[in-house]
Length: 422
Ligand code: GDP
Image 1 (cartoon, protein in one colour):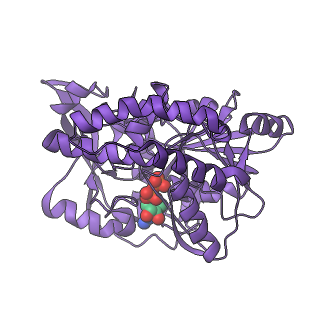
Image 2 (cartoon, rainbow, N blue to C red):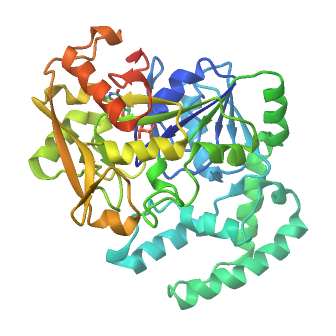
């Protein structure tokens, strides 16, 4: 059985919590894209954790956690995270694809220099080196883990790469050039560190799948940050879509269940069109009520932009994810509202539509809003869907109609146990 957990929106939907819950019934959890540029928050019996590089299945002894070939592998960040877990008594089983590529220190440098150069026209990069990393991967000047084990090969490749990097560093950014030996040393250090974890994950995953193991793909960010189907260029640099996992994990088989995660309201870290956005006191209050979920990005500490639930964006997000099920999170956060607003359509130059337009259309799209009655009671202790207040059930079922995808799980708090199945 293969399942995927992915975001229906801009990220931070609560995928980490759901992965942690699903990992209980999974043998293998695989990260298939992205890097340490976004975080997942997990709260369970062992405490509260923020994971960036590691799959969210690390808290169960029975799981193997895979960093797939599609991931931007930041080795120091991975080691730091592992050490933090081990210090708190968590000793996960981790394997890393020999085909994963490596985030170099100069990727982060280029990311920072470029955001500074762009100034006000910036894309809102997390400055973790992700865009320069993926640019190099597809320009064929990246380093695969497997290449680390051939020093001669590395030496001539570093020379070729530095010709390009140093031309840009010196002439475009006015920065001092990189030194060949220090880059070679960086690579050798990475090799020594990562060696115990490296396997051919393609063969491993395909063997495990043939043996009937339960495999879980864990996505980072959300559908609207996908480079093809998201709000490009305010997108990330690797595909955030469930079906990319068959490539980014290296398991070309049908995904049996695609779970798209969405919040009961909207939040968005970074730049780009965000039609349902709210401002001032209304936004402050929602951010405050959202607590950890509402305030700041796990990785960047940037305040999240917030808005009403956006049925146009979420329906689209579920469709591009090929979602078979939806998990609706953070429903508890809305309990303070007398009236709950939802964006049900967009207006594009006078034309009302439920179509999620392209990026130039979205820039000027206006939200069409519908109001629902709030339930006004604390629901965080409820464990059965039918016990939710009637108005809350009505809200959830209306969202389900609007997004045209089955809401099969409702999450009413950050803890592993605050979850209801429909
Ligand atoms: P991810 O990147 O999709 O895993 O999302 P994040 O972990 O960045 O953000 C989701 C936040 O919401 C985290 O702080 C979670 O602990 C929190 N969270 C998840 N589900 C719920 C929920 O149902 N209710 C509340 N109040 N918080 C939740």
